[in-house]
Length: 174
Image 1 (tube, rainbow, N blue to C red):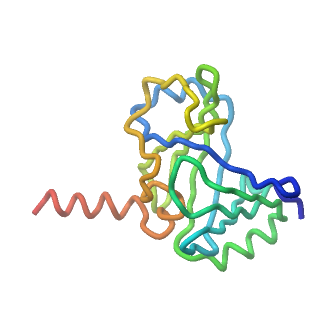
Image 2 (cartoon, one colour; image 1 turned 180 degrees about the vertical axis):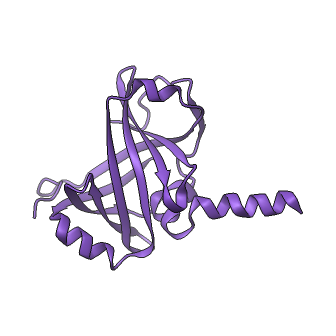
């Protein structure tokens, strides 16, 4: 098993998340990947997920639980067969999405178009080297949702976006 850390050095992910407006981003894409992921454990301090990409690559990832700009992350490669078995042990639902790569300015964005129980949700993410790093914001970005826990995949597995929309529709109708 190969893990994404060097001995004694814990990886830190610095990421900002935004909702996406419209579809202008689609003409800028350079690649796409089909992603399925499930959460094996979510505790007070960390979450553990298994992810399969394009039915060819699989990883197990442990991330610090806090939904914030910077999080500790360790990722290990596993076989797709092992990942499929681990998915059966999941807590909550399955996250299904297509991840599009969108270069813009000096950075590369990842735009996640969710399907299944989270259909209708589109989130753009950018990984940064520093929390204060400046970046150009494309016109198709909506509001920033960094740090808003309900937009993180672990939460979406337990409380799918589709239920939010259904609840909001019922509340508006009453």
